[in-house]
Image 1 (tube, rainbow, N blue to C red):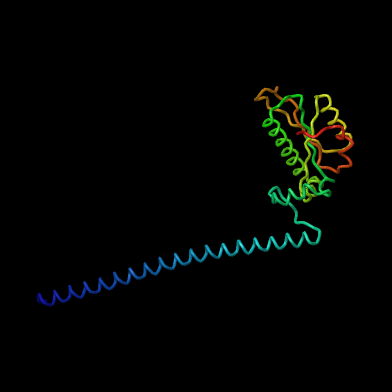
Image 2 (tube, rainbow, N blue to C red):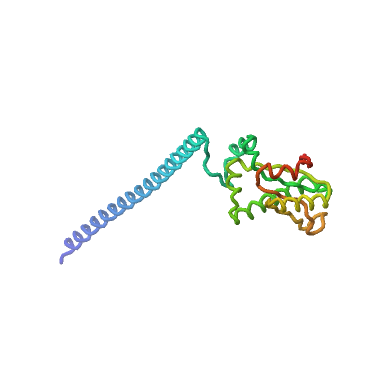
Length: 209
C-alpha cells in the first residue's frame, strides 16, 4: 500500500471519529435536556396537585360547616378553628379540667409544664383506651379549663370523688428535678367529660390566673 493511500485512510478515519464524537455530544445534550425537562415538569405537577388538594380540603371544610357538621379533628387540627370552637357554648359542654396545686409554690414556667404533661398524659391514656368522649371532645375544639386548689388534702378529695363519679382521671407526679420532692402530685386531670358531671366536683375551685 502506497504512502498516499495510507494518508487517505488515516484522514477518513479521523473524519469518522469526529462525526461520532459530535453525534455523542448531541445525544448527551439531548438526554440532559430530557432529564431537566422531566424534573421541572414533575416539580410543577406536584405543586399543582398540592394546591388542588388544598383547595378541595377548604371547600369540604366550608361545606361541612354550612351543614352543621365537621371533619373529625386530629392533634394537628387548625389552631384558628380550635380557638373559635373553644369559645362556643356547645364546646364547653364537653371539657377537660386540669387542677393545679398552688401550695407547691411552683413558678409559672414549671406550672405550665406540669399542666402540659397532664393534658398530654391524659390524652395518650384515653387514646389507647379508645375513649368515646375523646373524638367528640376534639371535634368540639378540645375545650380545657385550668383550676387551682390550695392543699394536697383537697387535691386527693377531688380525685376520689371524680373516680366515684366514673370520671377518667390522670395525676402528674413530679420528677423531683427542681425544688419539689420526687413523686409529688402536682396536677390532676379530669375528663374530658360532660360539664354536668364535672361542675359539681369543681364548682368551688377558682380559675388559675
